[in-house]
Amino acid sequence: MTLKAILFDFNGVLIDDEPLHQELLVELLLQENLSTTTAELKSICLGRSDRACLQDLLTRRGRLVEPEYLESLMRQKSTAYQKRLAALPQLPLFTDVCTLIQTLRTPIEGRSPMKLAIVSGARQTEITWVLTQAQLRDSFDILVSADDIQHSKPDPEAYTLAIDRFNQTFPDLQLTPGNCLAIEDSRAGIEAAKRAQVPVVGVAHTYPFHMMQRWANWAVDYLDDLELERIYSMFEPTESTRPQNTNSNLPI
Image 1 (cartoon, rainbow, N blue to C red):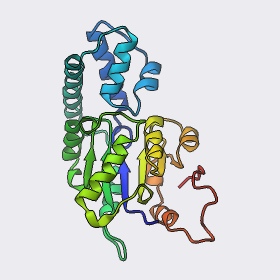
Image 2: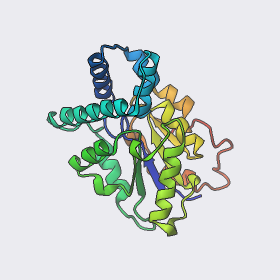
Image 3: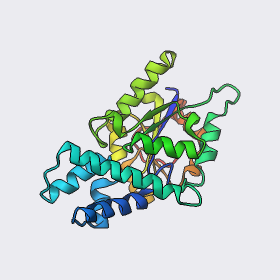
Image 4: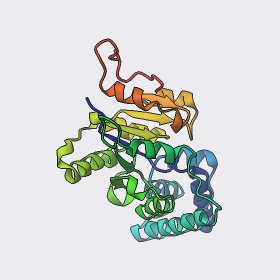
């Protein structure tokens, strides 16, 4: 089974913005005369869309969550997110992101540039703005955002949609979940990929390595720990190197 596409989560994988999201959610709830805790935000919101996160936070507090009200809160948060990032001296991308993406997109002998996608619960405007500022927009063939799906991770909808879009855009690719590798930093994201039958690497940007190792097929501390040649070989194993348990937590 050949590796044909790598599907990246966005928040917490490409950009180190999870603390900013938590800060903005706290401010948004305070504006509504509500409060939360870091532990609650981590358990409810990490890896999930703002829609799903805010819906649960507000429902827990007895608020009637009308669609217009929820959309207004999400717009406020999205606008504040972009303003906060724009005010920083530089985007908080993880230091190894640009190098990894450049390597994946560079053709080498016998191997075409890797197809890349963003599969995220973030808003489309947020993803596009960050990628444009980082001069990475053209590196990704497919973007799936919260605006494209009905169900947030851990539902597999976003991953299924990404694979469908690849096959619509590149009919000759004949992509299947087994041809993909997901890179996630949260339990919800890992579960979404696995439910879509996509093998997944957990990167320990948000949770400790041992938790990534427990949840994901493979785990790494940082993106630059990904050994690409070994990844390729894992998708084309010989009989002597074929893993006995494809769900084992072997670090890549």
